[in-house]
Image 1: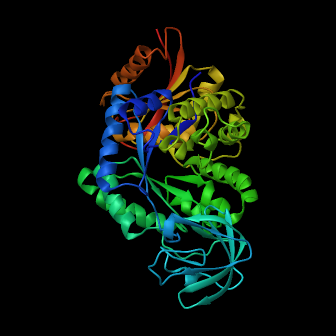
Image 2: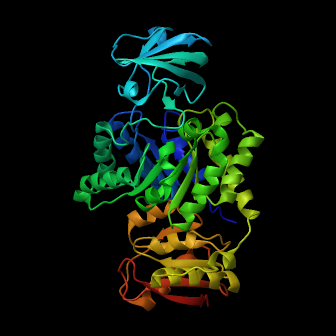
Image 3: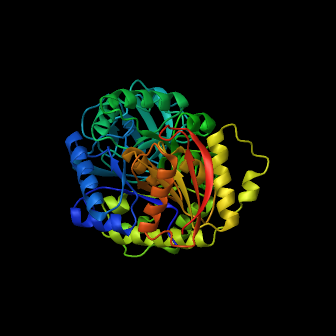
Length: 476
């Protein structure tokens, strides 16, 4: 049984050697994330080149996701790099100072904080480990009382409980980073802290302009990590190609207890709207230092798989952890086991569902037919990858093969659940294309004599969005 759920891994110091990277790709990485919070433009270009070279050597297509930093909603730096603040003490967040911080006050990278808060607001620092309550705002100074203290070090993040920080999703740095990401044609662009569909529309416009000279238009992933994004989630989804359930900052803003139900809701909404969804943050956190995951982490990954996520993501585990290859191996094994226990509910999925497009109806017909006939595979001949995407929104044990002549579409489909993208030549003759598709799957050992399969294509051939034919074939 092949794994349907995809794995996104973050490239970093622990995984930047060609040897480790190749082992990770062979262990199951489908999409490599480049975190633009760290490194220079040239660093990212070099890493993207490395990923392409190593993936080719490993014989596997791997997509690249450029993850934008977003606004720096952080405290400044401290004398000695850190301090300790105690419960009950007063602490000042000072937007005007350029001096190094002490245990009495610290500067702000986010200068708008004094205008975003009022007395009584709760501020959460360092992923919610420290809790401050605002007493007063005096000019550029936010005066607080420490409710939950502890160690506070350089550039730790600030969240406001319940949301309400006005920082724009796209900064000047992000706009430059989009140009860098388009220079190496990243298949996916992840936008941090979007609050509305407008944020995603602006990012798309910037990316399309930056990629125009290469005729490259990336797929956009909205990272859902602000409480303001939740009420307008449907609008953000419509303006995006997918979402990331970014549980870190989101949990700090809405509260830890709210996240599991939100995760399920977001995955369900994304699938219903034909969008992809990535579940992220602390999935295998203990494997940064330990060779095996905790039982809770195993359950967390498995539950995301059972919820229907397209992909599960690793961050520090592969970027800076001691066991990057082992972490990918463990995650792949957990996903495979969870999928084996998953139920197929195609009939329920199709009840009362209407299809306004011929290509969507053909895609759904292929699923239904393949499931009931016990086909070994579904072959979707697709230019853009849309047919394979629609098929992948429904849980089915039959593997879907996205066959395309476009390398960009092939890489983009690496993120789609239960889709194995393959490159094949473009044909103008339908029968020639169908025969070539069958031969490709036979050569790869997927199909053998006597096997049945469902295949979809468009006639005339070679036009995106033109899928209008479903055929059931049997290998002679």
